[in-house]
Length: 156
Length: 156
DNA sequence: TCCCAAATAATAATTATTATCATTTAGGAT
DNA sequence: ATCCTAAATGATAATAATTATTATTTGGGA
Ligand SMILES: [Mn+2]
Ligand SMILES: [Mn+2]
Ligand SMILES: [Zn+2]
Ligand SMILES: [Zn+2]
View (cartoon, rainbow over the protein chains, first blue to last red):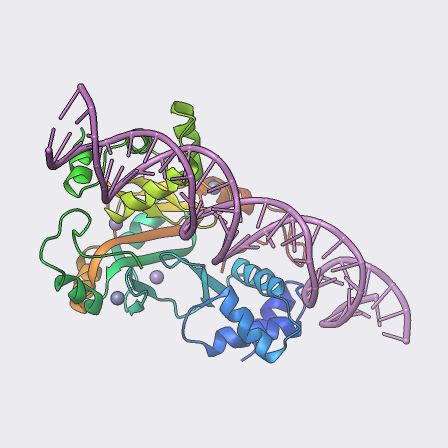
């Protein structure tokens, strides 16, 4: 339950209420949260906590490999508790991020990486495109219409 | 040589000197460049060109899939000419980005993705860690010393 | 209970990127 | 070749995201 208390203490970091709250929020969430989203939830519990503290601690937790940073498409960086890591199919139109149930860091890729002598500490794999719904919407696009109408896909 | 001229014209976009220069820079570079690095090189050729134009065109070129956006670890987004795409082993200490000669978007992964009905337009795969040199340097680190040792770099 | 490095809150500063808008220009039409 | 106009640009303001600064507070060991 509180293995993270040990992880922090063991390395000489203090156990503060701010850290408790941030980790609790990450633990209770299945989604990936932005620093700001975390900050908002933090403030619901304890309004006096500063957003800067959220950023500081997220950076620390990432450094300690207790949290992982996720760079999804556009928009701000997102965070999730390290562990059951997942890769995503991110829709460039609606922004949905569907979990892909497989990790490329295995088999052939793993072997090749190992051969390089590189010391791996994490990896990111993300697929960009259009989810089925958005993809269908594109299909139904207006007939023709010259320049830029192209795929009928307009930015988000 | 100038297949990109067609790609732009065909979709109704104009061939401007700014676009020529940006694409030429991307073409002559092996590294991935940030928007600002591109802007600097652009200004060496034609100082009157605005950084905003660089951003605007990079966004357009990405949208048209002529350029790909690369989110390496920290720092700003980087760009490279779309084509011979590669994935990287990025060193978190010295920043080196070594090409990995293999792409995970194949075999099992590919099959699973296809099953989801997701329309893939690009993907990113990147491995973070420490290159052999930096990894060795760490090895030679001071004997223990408790909290926060050195750069806070530990492995799991 | 004291002490002090570590952590925090508040806020300024910086970085990266996008938006606005007046002006220029590419390229099709005449 | 000249016109015309939507597209593109340059300059700059605005925004979003993150980091730095600094005075104050606090966790946890002695
Ligand atoms: Mn994985
Ligand atoms: Mn690939
Ligand atoms: Zn979608
Ligand atoms: Zn290195």
